[in-house]
Length: 162
View 1 (cartoon, helix red, strand yellow):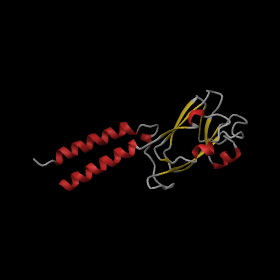
View 2 (cartoon, helix red, strand yellow):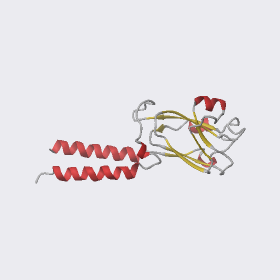
View 3 (cartoon, helix red, strand yellow):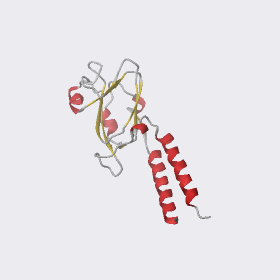
View 4 (cartoon, helix red, strand yellow):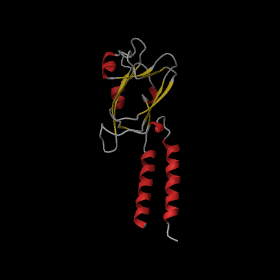
């Protein structure tokens, strides 16, 4: 029983640490999402993982955050976009490994450098396999973790010797 309890506690600690380890990145740092920023340089010293969030801050309706595939990125075309927003504050939670592509679909902006490609990894640095459950999207990992904590605590109480 004690070894099962210890394993359950270790799983709980590891799960909480993974949720706490998610990073929020302000795209472009102080510059935000606008023309004239070198987003390739911005990503060069960053590591992105499943669960991290990209926060795009920009002037509403003046720009878009349009997620595209590689051909849309290369051609600066949002015609077959995966998502599109022009609200001025867009948060994208990275839920799958691989390369994710974002452009501004306002004419001329992407061609002026307003495009971002991020390579997303899972634990261990892999860019393939693994996802975050759909319910965890949008930065809602911590509420989901509370149920795990409650269940683990209940299991430990039941398993505790009397």
